[in-house]
Image (cartoon, rainbow, N blue to C red; front, side, top):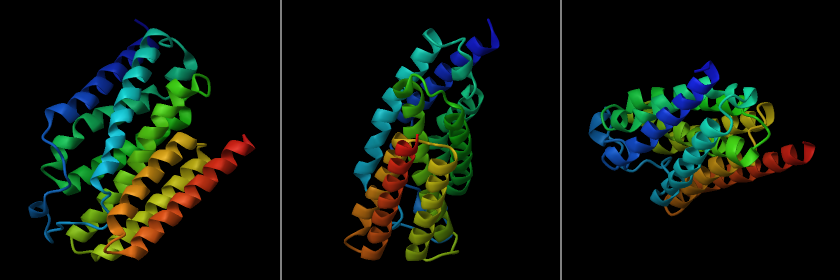
Length: 236
């Protein structure tokens, strides 16, 4: 077995573990307030529950991505470039949900590692087979961009470093900067912008009744990401 074929198999294996974790782990509704020095019961930065439905398309698209890569592109050099980074991200992701039930701080460190390796895999993904290669990775990395900044915002509030409002603005600002950099520097693509923007939309809906300025900030982030994605698409 060649190295490329082995890595294709590992993508499928870690991807299967990643998807299975969601069904084998108790439902996750946010970090347990009791696990933080300052209990955070309803963080402004956390998206509304419906936003997490994006994991359905991400999981399904990953299954297709892994199967196509294993059976049709196992030896393809362009598909193989980013596999090592993707394997690391998915392996970390397979253990994230159990960790999130035990340690918000540990889960935050891990989700940022997941994001970094996901962005590296996306940057190395091939342009051919766009819908099977870059789109699923873009959705995954885009949602992780929003989720990692949400996690960091909650931890900063839970450890008494920021108030709820300040944590929300800080998380949104950081997510916007990371997403903008990914779109400009890595050509992350429309799927990435869509997933990150979906996270922002979930935050806006949740915050609108109690913190309109947070909702406005999230809306501005959506507009910025949409504009950058359109500009990059036209340039390319």
